[in-house]
Image (cartoon, rainbow over all chains, first blue to last red; front, side, top):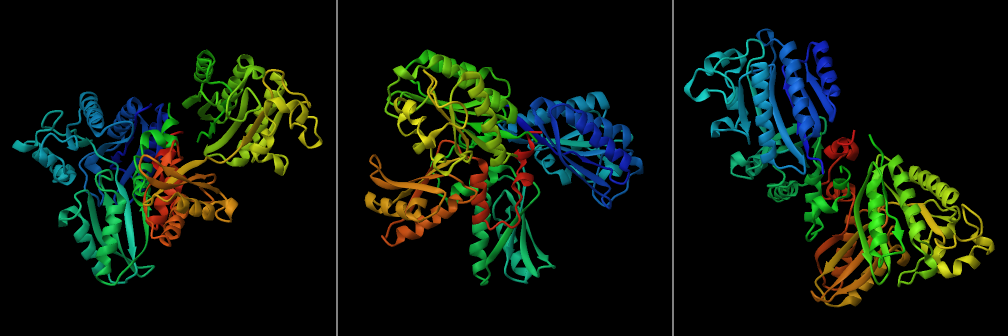
Length: 299
Length: 299
């Protein structure tokens, strides 16, 4: 079985179409890589690419994209609303099929080492690859942004995992790491009171004492005049979607509010939904990797 | 996107290990084919192979297996409990990914034509490929079995779709066709009364006036002392698993009986379970082919 890995590099460029096209062409030029999706946000001046490939191809694809970005994006001239510290800002590797998070940590380290060696960019390992607890959180790693990185790298706690305490003059600093796939899962309520969605979000999210692997906020869907609990499920194996769904259902009841629907935004691994079916159908002893036909397709 | 097709040839041999090994070797020798599974039943003297591959490879793989079976299985010497009419008895093609049933009908016809032309076996098209309503049902096509086929082919209604009204002397007759993937789905009840499972099975199955694409019987699980509704879901797109599950739930209630679990036997397409998750989570506007990550893996 081929081991399948997803990589979602974030590049600090969206306004220069030539550079975006160059990144797309680079992604498509690497054998074994499929570019599933890419989107560019002009106000953020940032592009997010989603690649998928086998264990070896994904490393080559990630490296070639970072190389192209290093050669074509100049952070000394970058402006944009989204926090950023490098030409390639963040490079996460996500286990998709027949591969563990631990193996993705190894992949992230190999790619990080090569990037530093061949391109001279200092690298912080983050999320599951982090070497220190405070580096797990991307926001903490990126704090100070590109403009503050020269000084930050000299601080005692912020020696890069790869490279010297010195930014790449135009490409800055890069965060590389492994993380679980994230599922964007929103649940719609039959109320126009966003406070209820907010209260429920606080209860279910890890930071509020709820499910550790769930992040959530309440939002108002103005066009439908309904409130929504908007979630990121950051580890669906440790917290399945049905668990937050049923919790929202019983928490909403105290307000006389019901669930009227839900949505999944963007991509989800099939397993995140198969796990849900297993729960509701009360399936005994289901073996996902053996019993799901598609898992046999990639020989 | 590669079009993925499953093929499940049934061969009239299980007792001669050399021939079974030869079939396995043949399946593995065809590029683009993955042999997912094969099982041999000694009392049936029959082996079922499950192959998967792209549109072109699956045709070559199916043909090479039928060729090997034709050269190595002699139906004049075959005994076994299971009804059969040929060395390769039945050859179904099942749409798995990015391909329609109609396209699989075309594939079945192409393979059938080649088998008849190169190997001289008369062929009936069955299931979704059938040219007459009475040929949809395999049991009707196979009635008379190998020993009765010489006479049957001379009957007015039983001219083969490919070939003359004359069996292959050692390989007999073959049924080729397209069908939807079948999901074997069993629901366990908290009762030791198999009559209740039988009554529910009669209500839910198409032949009893229930769901057209559901076949079902009641069975007793002796080791657990519970009754089970055992189903074949022959078209999960037209009748999802949750529908029979919820129907069994409310039908069982009149007997004071509850569902205590379920099982899926063997393989299932991921979509059969993702459809179930969509129902229970009330997901709005889910696009299976675009939003499920794995659907992008095969470029």
